[in-house]
Length: 289
Ligand code: PMP
Image (cartoon, rainbow, N blue to C red; front, side, top):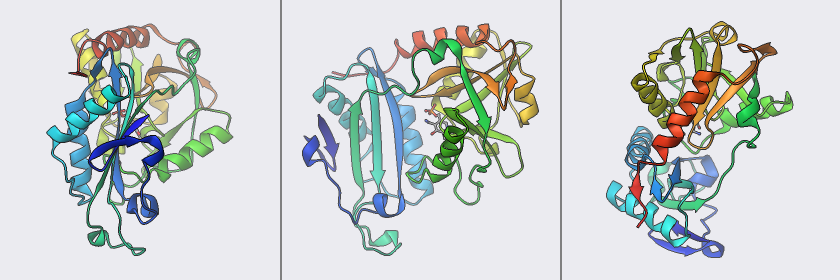
């Protein structure tokens, strides 16, 4: 496998970073998870916009332009023969000292890995997920804003540990006010009487690109879509609940905290949106050439 590291493609065995890199020492950096479908990189410009916004929010200057990173992403897919896959784009603060001071890190480090991913076993897309609410509160926006896709994912990892310990693959996270934020690695939607609702990013959700795409596709398909504050109650009494994310795409949730959602099976709106998403994702994107 070839990895893009710094400014060039290198063999996987040579793709190593310094133990003084602040990405490793402090989780100081930003990242994106991106999909390639059918020989195209899906939503590449949108991922780059979010990456640069995350970097700006943590005062990290990315040494490459968006156009250069875009080319490097496509080049990494090409070098690895990836037409359908998952791309991890990481920018760390770079090599510094053992102290916190990020200004002593002279140059950021750009890493691009193009590989395969399967987040959930295929059968879960037909049976749906069971999830639980976890005790770990989503990061307070004035501590680390959840809109920043930073390398410091401990908040999400703590939630994932709780979910797994409870026998589930995902956990529902609430914000510091007890409002629904998102799952540990995916956004959440409820469908009730044909209306889709998802929490706004101000409630502690990452502004997911899958979320935004699903909102657009649902509106085009004639559904009303709302961003509003949600309580767990809104999920418990929904007709359907689903999660969205780049890796997961769209997956039904059929049980939350031992409450069956709707009739306990993946719903028809979720299936319709999954089909629309699959079609859209395979027809759009930056050509890998
Ligand atoms: N929330 C969190 C915490 C995430 O890490 C992700 C990405 N896996 C998402 C939501 C979904 O975002 P996207 O659709 O852009 O992948």
